[in-house]
Amino acid sequence: MCIRDSFNFDSGAHLFRGLPGGAFATSIDVTTTSLTTDFWSIAPVDTDQDGDLDLVYSVGLAPGIVVSERENLGSLQFAPERQLFVIPNLTTSPVNVRPVDWDMDGDIDYVFPGPVPSPSGPGGVEWIENFGGQSFATRAVLALAQSNVRALTLVDLDGNLVPDLVGVEINQLSLSGLLNERTVGNVYCASTANSTGSIASLAATGSSVARLNALQLTATEMPPSVFGFFLGATAPDQVPGAGGTSGVLCLGGQIGRYSRPFEIRNSGPAGSFSLSLDLTDLRTPTGSTSGAAGQTWYFQAWFRDANPSPTSNLTSALAVTLR
Image 1: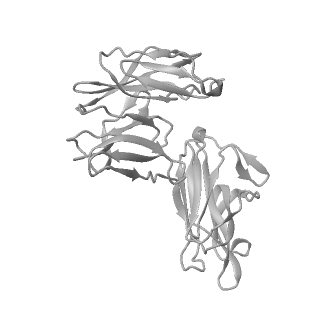
Image 2: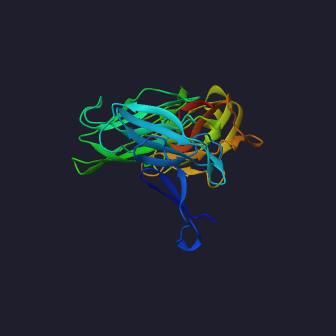
Image 3: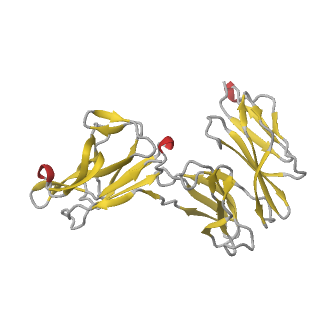
């Protein structure tokens, strides 16, 4: 049973297959680049979404960095090397090229430290967007920094289902972070002011790509410490006072509730709560259904309020078209 794999690189890459008890099998040479230079970075990532981890690696070759991949064919067999693109004019010390779906569109993009000098000034982070079909954008600035960024890692720091960036600034001897605040959907309807004096808002983060199944709803500007839950529907509407609420119900068609015990939320001291949706379990009045590309779903959050007597209200409403 494989517990852990690791990679070692200089002029080639070797895989050490993990064995039970913390031991490792004899190394397997999984790629030797056709370019006569050393590896600068290597990462396992499923670039073709077939369930197998492929290898993406970068090598330094003036006047730039060559980024290539080898597809995983299964059973530790890899296809021949295929060059993806060249990052021009990036000839500083070894650069850490990180594959990640930064824009959450289902295609693997590439994030890397900017050179010095570079379009991003004394230091920073750049990226190359993947348009799909082996088509890539030119390099673009993603974030600025006070000094040279050398080491990068990508992780969801704030729990909104999108990757954030952490970099080490060498000259400043510090860590810098960039939160990826990518939102999804469009607000199409507002409710009324609640007891805080504000109209509660609804936003979505993550991805509208159905197969990624990574969409999170967040309701904010609600009264503190009130209970509520999310609603989903197949059509929009605008019904003030529906069911005795003080707000406006902006949903129509088939309306479902995310009100199972583990889905009911409390707004806490911040007056907000979130729910990560399962796009294979979107609610309807009679149960649930699986979302598919091309469908538009409409969401809103209901919550208790006292304004001044006990009542309820709703957030603004959000339309999300799945891709």
